[in-house]
Image (cartoon, rainbow, N blue to C red; front, side, top):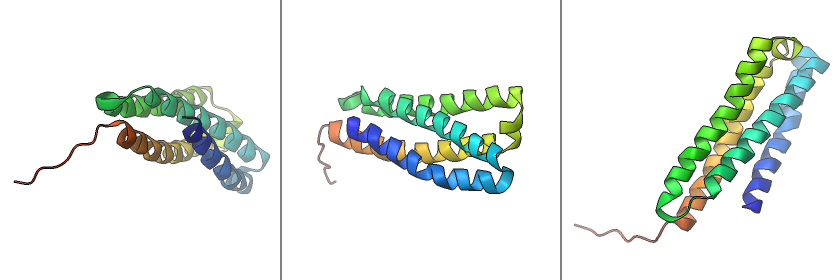
Length: 130
């Protein structure tokens, strides 16, 4: 689990300079702040989704993956709703778009890790030919 969490953290952290450069190019320092908030929300959602999926083993591993996907989606969605309703400079600086970008990145990484987890925890089944 620790390796998976570190993997999610590393990928999202590595993406931050790209988001920050875009934010600075588009809106200056407000764009960099928006990138930082989006990174924090994306990281929280990604880590929470991976952690939620980790507890399921064996035949229940698929349910864990689905729970992880729901958790991974709810965190940035709730943050986007909060910031959208609140408004302000971060929203004008592209926070909502960056939240979507981080969500998609976290979803890709977490799904790849969850699939590996399911493969390791599922009992081996041999296919029978007909």
